[in-house]
Length: 438
Ligand code: CAO
Image: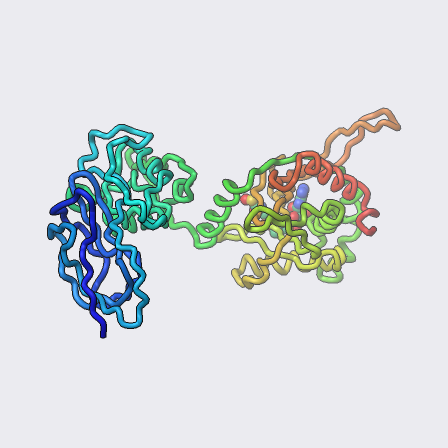
């Protein structure tokens, strides 16, 4: 066994500085430059790094001790270790314990203790982090290791209240802050900088009943919120003349019923959408995770929003391009029923390329559906209504059944011109049912 003493190296003008944190325990295995402890003078906090690697055999200091250059810190068993030496005290950043006198951004220009040239780069002060920290108008009081910890987790020290002596921010304070941020329901939690939603006691104004949100609503709510704020939505409105399509559908209802199928408009819409996706492949795509590439899908799985007593679910009809309208209608009915009975399997809700949300059976004229990310577009259908439409040939208004279309798309992927082309294509498909066969 080879036991070596670790002494406090040359720490410049620091003498009798207080040990405020010890980052190692007996038995820990250390590498060169791992932080051993933090000391603090009235001007600065600094980390003392390990000059070489080894196993901690014995600690010779405790929190609160005063140390100077040459003080014995601990004993390291260096058996089997290459003893590369860095022997540098690490002066991380200026952290005056009395914070109140310091002004806002940029950070104050108090003379920081000089940083020896041989300090490893990873221990050098980080101006970016410092700016974030000072953005609140006061500097944070935290040790370099806590600063590093906060930086790694993306925590802004300027917003964290310290529970240590003289308000010093401890590692646990950073952990608690992160936990609290993650628990927040608003955009604050994902770093959007929204002000927190006000907490209001509605009982002050009248009677209130508290109802727990169903599980599906909680899950879909979080996803809808993320999709709404992460994808820049544009909604293109249009109207399709479905007079002939509706005549055809009605003429087929009996035949469909004999086959046990309720032939709905939605089944025709699925076919029309697939035709449009073939013509405009960027609508059948997703952005790669790094946002650098478009992933074009060569399959046509179309989801449909289904209203259930527990909330919204989106079953996915697979390979719509390979199925006829009757098959699709049958599948829509079966999947809706399963969804409403909570029997839909998870994989029946996965793999969608594009979603249709139909409120046509309920009402309304137009709406702005939220994209089911990572898909890049969604089509909303509202209630079809009879409208007077100008017929150029007969030079007269004719009553036509018009279906309102609301296409929301991700503007990072799809341009406005293509959005309008897509709905125009749908109009064309829906106005002439024969085209759906092509
Ligand atoms: N215009 C006029 N009438 C329409 C229509 C439209 N666009 N779409 C459907 N209808 C009619 C149907 O023909 C049917 O009439 P009949 O009973 O006389 O035949 C009636 O409305 C009900 O249709 P449906 O709801 O049974 O069938 P569907 O295929 O239109 O819809 C489904 C199926 C699952 C989409 C629907 O039941 C549903 O859940 N819709 C809600 C979707 C939703 O919540 N979207 C919002 C998501 S974003 O918050």
